[in-house]
Amino acid sequence: LTGRGQGQDRIETLIALMARLPGLGPRSARRAVLHLLRKRALVMAPLAQVMAQVAAEARDCTVCGTITTGEICDICADPRRDAGLVCVVQDVGDLWAMERAGVYRGRYHVLGGLLSALDAVGPEDIGVPRLVARAAGLREVILALPATVEGQTTAHVLQEALAGQGVTLSALAQGVPMGGELDYLDDGTIGAALSARRIL
Amino acid sequence: LTGRGQGQDRIETLIALMARLPGLGPRSARRAVLHLLRKRALVMAPLAQVMAQVAAEARDCTVCGTITTGEICDICADPRRDAGLVCVVQDVGDLWAMERAGVYRGRYHVLGGLLSALDAVGPEDIGVPRLVARAAGLREVILALPATVEGQTTAHVLQEALAGQGVTLSALAQGVPMGGELDYLDDGTIGAALSARRIL
Image (cartoon, rainbow over the protein chains, first blue to last red):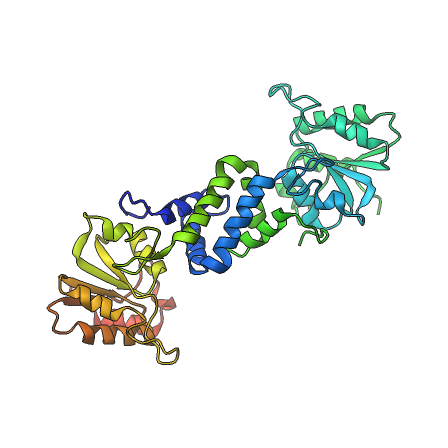
């Protein structure tokens, strides 16, 4: 990229590592590193320190399974979050997407994957027993799983595992997304939206 | 942004710091951190380490003034780069832009700023004496300075400082940029391109 020799300059190494982050290419990585170099004491050193701490301390929340640097995560520790309501998501990225929407005030259960016979992922691997153990104190469990074969298999297994626990089980509605044009939607989504139509 | 409580989770701190980098917003910073969290040992820890090292070791190259983690930078240390040719640039970002073009095989002099009476930036502050000291062994000095008042003032002062040193002084050509449409170009550029027109 740079036309430079095989130098030992660690700045080039840093740029190469930054360029591998999603959303950053070689060019924007270089711009980001230039910004960091200009603010070495104020921005770069603290960022490096926090990143090293997170790399060392990050682990699964013992309650919900999301990644956190504490013993339990901020959401599980927050008394204002509804402890009777648990949303089941595939992974941390999906939890963050739910949080970004800013409309959910309950807690979570992060599976860390989906059931898959092919990849030999069983119920224990995605913390199903842990969810069942939590179920006693819960009012409702909301499944927010992908509408794929594996997502639906997982939903089915969770439904069976939670049957008879006296907890209401629900799933996110399927339908036309905000701003979605019918012409660009797949048949499955149109079918689901039609069968779940609301009376106006 | 997230609708979460005032938690102590360092992951949120890391996301906030990453989001301040140019080219990354809150959303892409979150995606980048998620990627890092998934590859803690393989990607995150090494990146944090290299970043801390660069923050601690980065300094000005004693020859050309660019930022490097070595005693002298890779370009000044590279015997294949033409030591008789020096390109004068305003800062490290401009040096990197020249390198990215991949068409220059000489060396550099990084001013680290431009002369400015307003900001009390004098010739010593931008390493003019250091450039003059280098001039004896040089064949040509190419000025790659911005076409602003301060850039041209700086070019003028460099021209005076290097007069009588027996070194050829040149400047980047001004004209129509690649893919540039006349309709969108400023008058100054059109004027410069006209007066510097080539006979075909």
